[in-house]
Length: 471
Image (cartoon, rainbow, N blue to C red):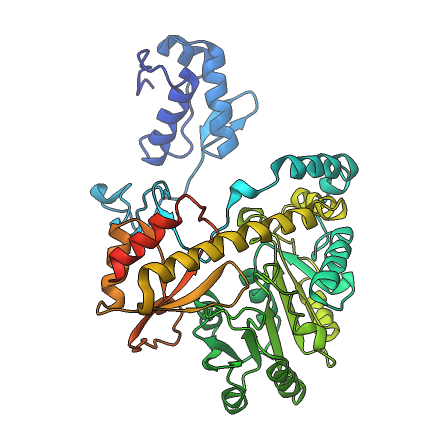
């Protein structure tokens, strides 16, 4: 048997790999039949003019993968391998669908007014690395094991103290579930059983969450807003099992829900055992000029609020640290369902966050961020008003990392979005936030304008480019 030769010109492949590859193809193509004996190692080495070790290594790899079997004192024989069914045409092998191909994304040269962006130049890397070193030294043994399904207790206890102080959230560490984002945490909650059949969400609102609810097969209802936030009359009429809201800084309009509407919603939720409110407190750490607004959960007397928070805005979305606070009855069901769950956040990042908070660095960082963003926000709004005059209406609510603005223009949403792409300006118009296939038909064009990626030097460019694409 002498069916192939070694190509000595091939430099990126060892000789044993050539032998292995050739035999594999011969076996799969049935050029060498099942049960047929392979040449002895010494003879094949002589025929191919290679070392015996090269042949031995090739045979061992074929044996390990199941192409051949070894019979003691006899040699190596070809296994009877099942053939591939429905063979593709030769010209289709290795082809990839054009509509699935991607190109590497780059934000280079893009001026971002995204509500999702953060400014990593403000991240306290040195202080974070110091906390990471402490975490690694203190918890090396803990990190060699799989973490608790809800995240390390020590970290949950620190988060519980933090949100009690900053947001008035009343909970024990046991009630906190840590995960890599609000969406995967929500998916866990909504797939625990059959008690959640319908979901309500603010309109305009969070498009990603709307699509999540739809994808889970829930009956999703988009509920309009009035001056106080989500319309309570519509909530009562549509009566979803779970209501997703952003009361401390409505997304995207920025409205802050007054106490009267908060109590009305809590009363509505308390009227049925299967009703819950999911409070997404996505950027409540940022409040300018006044104290923070207490969370809806802090008012809850009937364990009807699932509180959701994240460190994506204050630290970085790439750290993937979010959390939820579950009422005790849902916590019990969560533990029954997810007792074997491996939570998705990095354990090292979680312990680092723990010491970053405990050492006071998080509080200092948050104070610096608020001072910086308040300054940028104020200048951005001032410049917008100067340039657009009466053609702009700004919902000037001093909170969060974006505000909502409406422009008087003869251009359509599609025209403006196309112009923004040409000018490499990242913006999100109201079309993204209008849910349930609703098309905005207002006379003014609405946008959620994020300012986290702006600085004093590029604000003018952002305003000028906005004018260019809108007017």
